[in-house]
Image 1: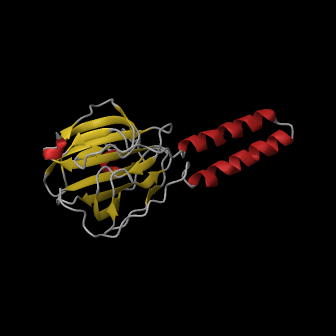
Image 2: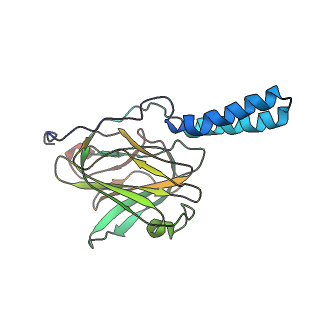
Image 3: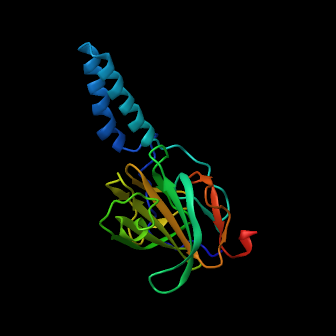
Length: 227
């Protein structure tokens, strides 16, 4: 493959053990738990302490070993594969889409599936349907990012909200170069993440498969390195 273009390099922000949101949502719960315990209300303390632990688990941000191979598309998120199939894109072209459903128990930090330059970021939608609902594909609030690889091929990664998700974070900006596996965003509290690949790409997962963001290889792009 050709050399990486001299684009501004994306600076990864999500590098700590927990996403920063844990402080906003988790600490108040632990404070209430501690106060309830001090006031002699152990049941209330346990409930809020449990909620605090859940929030901490939700915003966990584990390190992952990124598989080698520029043409190997890695999972952008943890979760269960709910779709593997051909679609027609907005410009009338055919593409391979792999959809991943993230339950509230999965890691919700999103990673770049391939290395590439951000050529577009489009936000759309106004609904918050369950992420596995077919209508959620077009109606839910979403953030679609397109990456142009060094050889010119484009790969899309789409963050889609779910039933209780209300915010999508995308730290990348147009023109920046993202390395494979870099942590570029987050969807808060239940969601779906899709990868849209050029037709001819070979899917390596099936519906129902459990995947791990940054470490599971979802597909291989056409090319010598895909062997």
